[in-house]
Length: 261
Image (cartoon, rainbow, N blue to C red; front, side):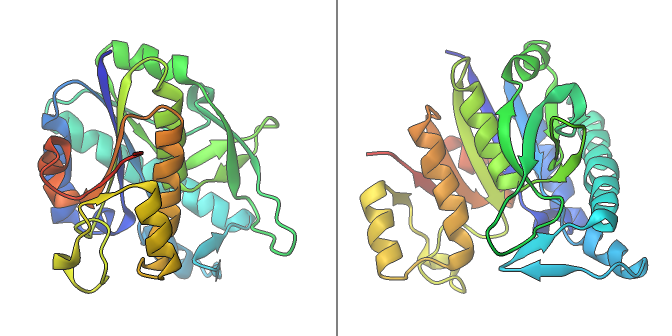
């Protein structure tokens, strides 16, 4: 089976022009088929502030009202997405930038919660894997913005980590998929302030123990939940690590490997 890399780039790297440029150069140099899923960074929050649109965050998640949806769509699916595509083209990596609405790539539904109204936030229903496969077979690298669409044509703001996981799972029937979560840290750390406290491998039993002993930084738990869900759905390997070490992550010489045994 041919290999495909599904790589998620975290928001903090997107905010750093120099680090992003270096990361995209490394991404462009990867041999073979690849998909990049990006977050939004701080630009949407900054623009919302400039426009006087108040932002509400509950449990670290953005509440997406109608005005905020306009801003995140402009920023994520517009400026950030096309800026990434343009930089990849400069490295002779032929790329296409998509949101979930384009080619009906990702269908979702408005999140329902018993006590919190998240507004226009989407939870994923399906991925159009055959459309993505058609593009990959033409040796086009795909750059996905975290905006999806529902059955009624409503755009929805959607978690980029989850998008990466769902795309990786959907392509598992066609390819040997490796899912990489790249961000500003070296991987999963025992002490979030100490880069040398890297855990090199985590399997389900180790993860359970680390959670019980509260040794994992809370912000990392959704990433790890996504990683194990992907492994259980046919993704071959999941790696979490530093965006600046992308080539080492791919060769297995860096980051945290999430394994299913």
